[in-house]
Length: 197
Image 1 (spheres, helix red, strand yellow):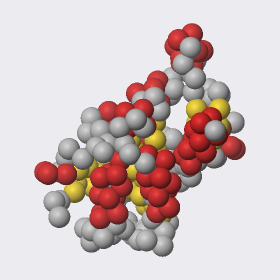
Image 2 (cartoon, rainbow, N blue to C red):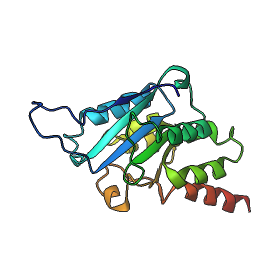
Image 3 (cartoon, rainbow, N blue to C red):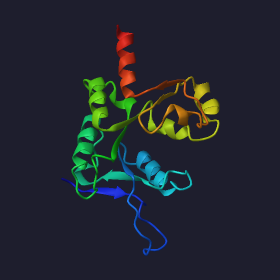
Image 4 (cartoon, rainbow, N blue to C red):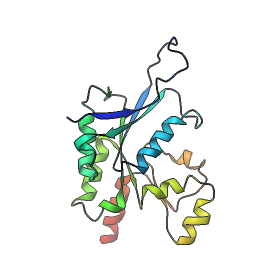
């Protein structure tokens, strides 16, 4: 198995004399992209305290290395995530920890055979963070008035898929309101099938 690089600041502290506290839960992120998504999650880890992320939640970005660096196909990303759960170097606790697989849905919906089944199967053991139309749109939504100023005038719709990281309660704190809120990526598959019938 090719090595994987884990980026975290969980154990960075002013002094090494402080007692180490084990996190309640670790969230491991594996991303399709090697640039934008990686930058975003590294920054999230770096500013976690400013964002009031609970101190007992550890966020880790698993960067693909060597031969695994080019994995971007959703099926391969999900397989890679499952393999990493067995990697002793990252100490994934199957009882507590969560693996989040991040990929752009718009790129793969048409290209992947049985995409809906793939998503449904992937959600059984992981959290899938599927951005549609693109992760970059998700980044844009972090800016105040971005929806009103940039997205709405373009005629683009926004959909928020709740998948364990966001809830209907946290939605109230967002600076934007999505056009539609779905309970999971599986809801997208159900909607698509309903339209076909």
